[in-house]
Amino acid sequence: MPTATPVRRRRPSRTRIYSGLAALVLGITAACGSGGGEQAAGPGGVAQVDVGILPIVTNAPLALGVQKGFFQEEGLAVTTHLGQGGAALLPAVISGQYDFAFSNNVSLLLARSKGLPVSIVAAASSAGVDPEPIDEAIVVPAGSPVQSVADLRGSTVAVNTLNNIVEISNRVTLEDAGVDLSGVKFIEIPFPDMPAALAQGRMQAAHIAEPHLTKAVQAGARIIAHPYRVVQPDVHISSWFGSDQFIKANPDTVERFARALERSRAYAAEHTDEVRAFIPGFLNLDPALAGEIALGKWPAGMPSEQSLRSLYDATTRYGLLDPKTLPDPTAVLRKS
Amino acid sequence: MSRRVVLLALEVLTPLVVLVGWFVISAGSTSLYYPPLADILERFGQIWLGAGFVSDALPSLGRMLTGYVVAAVAGVVVGTALGLSPVARTLLGPAVEFLRALPAVLLIPFALVVFTDDTTMKVFVIALGCSFPVILNTVDGVRSVEPLQLDVARMFGFGRVERLWRVVLPSASPQIFAGLRASLSLALILMVVSEMVASTNGIGYSILQSQRLFATTDMWAGIVLLGLLGYLINIALVVIEKRVLAWHRGFRASVLGS
Image (cartoon, rainbow over all chains, first blue to last red; front, side):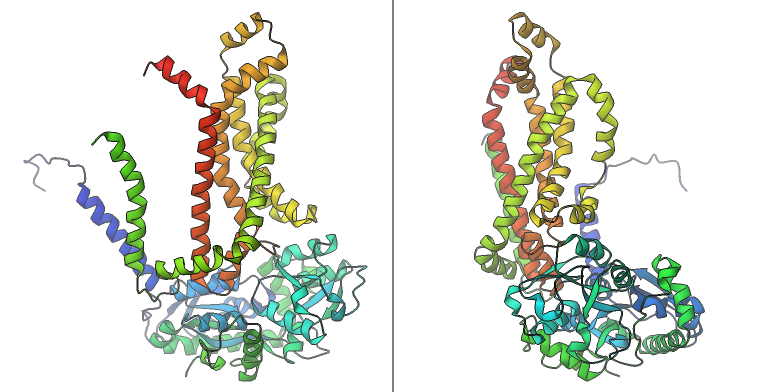
C-alpha cells in the first residue's frame, strides 16, 4: 500500500449519502419482492427450507417429523419459525422469508381472491366426524343459561381471528340453528386468554382450540357445538402452502417437502403416544394436560375440493369474498 | 425573503413533496402490499369520511380522550405529591420507576380479565400508559421550583395551598406540558393496540378487520387516518399550551432580553 501520499479524510459527500440511501431503499424493496429463487441444491443435495408454523397441536406432526429426521432424509434442512397467527405467516411466504407455512383454508381462499400468489401444497388438518374427539369447539362458561347454539341469540362470541375459518364456521353454525346473525357480535381474543375471559363473562361463548379447550372444560365450561362439522363433516380446516413463485421454481423441493410431510403425518397418526410426549416441549405444556387433550385429525394428501367449496360458499355468502375475484376455489390448490 | 418565511414554506412544502412523491411512485402499482396512493385516498374517503367516522373513529377518539384526561389529572396529582414530598418519593419512587418501564400493552390480557366492561378496559390501558410521562415530568418540574420564589411567597404570607396554586404549579407547567405532549402519541398508540383485542368497534378494530381480509388498501386508509389524527391532536395541544403558557414565553423573552 502506497503510504507516501497523505490520504485526505473526506466526509462522505451529500450525493454519496443519497445514493447510499437509494441503494438501501432499493435493497429493501428487492428483498421484499424476491420470493423464492431457485434453491442452491440440486436433486442430490440438501436444500435449506424455512417453514412458518404456529404453536398449536395441529403443527406437532411436522415439528416431530423434523426432529425424527424425516425431512433430513429427503434432503431438506428444515428450520421452523414460530409465528403468532396464519395472517402473519402469509406475508412472510409472499416475501420469500419462509418457503412454506401453515394457514387455515378460509384465509388462504381470501388471500388468493385478493391476488396473493399462494397455493396449497398439502392438507394439514380436518374436522373428523361425530363422535370422534375434536380439538376445537364452541363452549359456554360454567353456569351459563345457554343450552344450545339457538340460545346464542344476540350474544357476543369470541374467536381467535376475525374473518378466518373460525368466524366463518361459527356464523354457519349459528345461522344453521336459526340465530339471527345481525344480532351477534364476534370479538377477537387469543386462545390462551379465552378461558379466563369466558369465566369472567366478557362474552357468552367462545370458539376454543386445544389445549385451552381442555383447560376450559376442566374449569366447568360446556361444549355446545363443533362448528367445522356443521359446515361439512370432516371438512378440511387448514393446509401447508407456499408462494406460486417458489413452487414453480422449486418443483423438486416441493415434492420432497410433501413426501416428508406425509411421512411425518402417518408416523404421528400411528404413534399418538409419542406425539403426546412431544407436545409438552413443543407447546410448553403440562405433560398431564398433554395426555388428555384431543389431538385432532391429520388427513393425507391435498384438501378435498368439496371442503374448499363448502368454505368458499359460506365465505362468499357472508360477503367477505367476492366471487368475481376468485371464481374457482380449487385455484388455491397447487397445480401439479 | 426572511428566514421565517423560508422555514414556514419548508414546513408546508416538505410533506406536500413527500405526498406527491408517494402519489407518483405508487401510481399504477399492482403490488397488494403497496397499493397506489390514489386508491388509498379513495378508500379513505369512502370509509372514514362516511359511516366509519361515526361507527369507528368517534368511539376511538372518545376512549382515547377519556384515558388521556384521566392520565393527565392523575399524573399531575401524583407527580406533584412526589415532587413536594421527599418521603413520598422515597416510598413510591421505586414503584413508579418499575411501572413506567412496563409497556402498558402487556397489561391488556390482564385488563381483559379484570374489567368486564370493554370501554373501561381500554381507558385503563390508555390512562396507565399515558400517566408515567406526566408523572415524571411533573416531579421534575415541581422539584425545580426556585427556592427563592417559594421564600418570597412565604414572606408575602401565602398558605400552602396558595403556594401550590400560584407558585409551584405555574412554575412546573412548562415541564408538565412536555410530559403531556409525550403522552399524546402514546395515547394514540395504546388506543389502536387496545382495540385490536376483544373489540367490536374502533379504528384499531377496523384496521385489524382489513388485515384479516387482506384488504391492504383499507388498512393503509386507516393508517393515513391515524397519521392525520396524530398531527391534528398535536396541533390542538400546542394551541392549548400556547394559551396556558403565554406568561411563560413572555417571561422568558423578558429575562433573556430577546
